[in-house]
Length: 400
Ligand code: PHB
Image 1: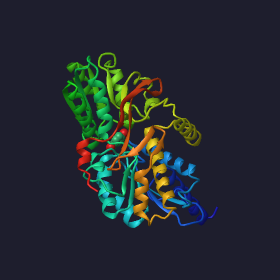
Image 2: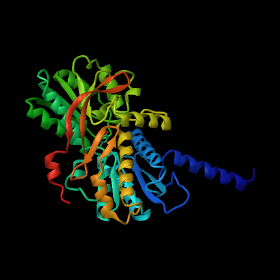
Image 3: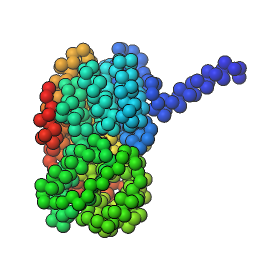
């Protein structure tokens, strides 16, 4: 092969490799014909939250596929940015998507500290933005905006649901909380604390770690010494898997029940080797939800990606469903933004999690389930809180 042929192959190889790795800047789908909608996917494609980003993208792509590969007849071009779950890099990353790439829709992200920077930009620019995970309170509060929707949750919601469950248990009167010290951990614990203290429980210690620290051994010794009736932990992704394994290895499982928001056990069970058995969590999704929609969703997701979907995939899928509903209402004309937004506000999603409607602040109102780890499943046991809206104080701060 001559030299130039070699160079050509190498470039193509590198480009394909970078696209497969989800690295910045490569349009992943370009369909022929029509004025394409430019969709910026700003997600973590590396680090502790990388599997969450992959699930969200898969879910969104599945919704697009089910919409016929186009939203209201408009083909799609994806522009992907790896945000690395790094708030320091977020302003430059979102600026690139909005101002340089001039995307029509931003979908992102997972980490609340990154999301807040994204919102500052999309809010000012008025560009459509769907949050498929980050649960930061401000998105449904002081930073709410007509062009910003969230298909996932607020961090407060599952914390509140688990706090309500624990408050109802008379044998659980003192709890230790543990979490990453950034918006997600703080707001999750806030939700838990509010409901649990109101029900007469006591928090004997709040333990905090910097994100994305995953060194738990000294905390586990302290928990053993404190002997609480339960531990409520906010961690997610591969760090949660490690925590579940360490907790079990420390021998605490049999003595101090571990509970949390569902993120603790979501999408990680295959890598915990049974260490999470019996752990109870609260979340708006879970395994064995026998709704017709969930059955078809799980089958379609498994067929497309060879994996079982998790809560992150559901939010990505619902982001696609929500956008599709809006686009159909405006017949693909995104210049008709007021009508697009109105249609999205009025959408009642047939989500794999169950029915979802949006609050005045564009945050989902949905049932919260109590789940228990059984084998490789986060099995839904009961409804913990029906049709839960956001923290009333947060919602009151939303003006639009
Ligand atoms: C967040 O940063 O809001 C966040 C991240 C991961 C989760 C849940 C919430 O699993």
